[in-house]
Length: 464
Image (tube, rainbow, N blue to C red; front, side):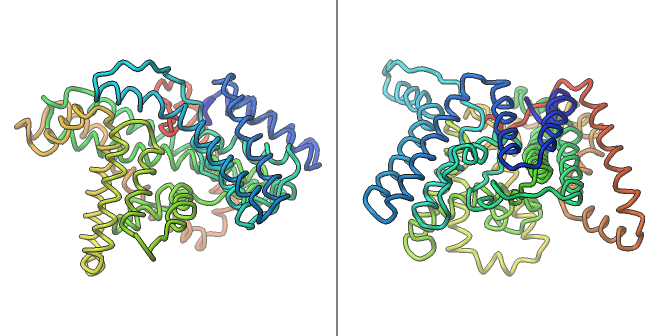
């Protein structure tokens, strides 16, 4: 079940909201949230609910042990158990078949292995439960003794399968003490609709362009097709993932939770460091706080720390060599920026700094898109004139017929519309009372119309 499906929008979410607000008792509401979340998760993968519950049970128990024996060897053992069991489960499902198949290919062996189906959201909820035990061990949070409350934290469906990664420390006091205000609920609806428009109108629209141009035979394609395709994918992955995050944050607010922001207009960044402060913020801060800083951060072994973090970041996204290459690409660029050209980049005029960053992340998305190195090589050869064709009919007609969509994506990827709407709201007092509600209803209706006949409606980050 996905947020942008008619089943979710017309049946699941309204029923859950009605049941949730039937009673104001927090235990009742947490129970509704847990049951709804387990149904939501089990809808597509009923078997893997077991993995989710097992992961929650592991860290609930380890949290109790750490609390009871805080500062003693038993607490350290509980933390180690949490790390080993959680990361072991993640590695088994996500990486075991890839590792063994790579060994077989590299050494001509035939070691048997099983291709596990990847449980939805395992990378997200594994990191969430780990944040609980690690912060417990550090003494930064209080123990959660109520198993229902802990399961509510781990399983809550608004952000369960594709983030953002919600750390326990950020919602510790909201689990058993939260209140939904009319203003907060209105904001939640507004944010949810904003995310749905990003997903249904823009991500799905440019996604069809990217698939049509990038999944063909790039060895005989043109420079124009290669670049239009990868630019379309650049917009698709942003609107897809940030749209999901907006919907998750909006639904969280409807239920009384305040999730932290996960995107901050990353495509206006002026260097790679700035880009990764703005893109998938919950993942970047997780690796910063739990890997980079404990290793020494900027104080010692900085280059090693950066490269290791970005190797892990690449691996987190998937069991494929292209993700490792993608992580190494950004790790090397960050090292170069910090150690060699930081001063030069700071002195660059804003336009050129932004242009440099655009080129960097567009090329990075090519590494991210192609899991097959042969197809990746063909794209790079095509993009830089290796096929000898500057343009072709497919690329030209696709560009011309979708130019409005690509321009709209470019504009909406910046805060221009947000600033413009705020300015308009200050000048016209009727905006918040009349214009905003009418606009929300109109956009929601438009999304419903598109969804009725929609055949292309995936969430890209479900596979991570």
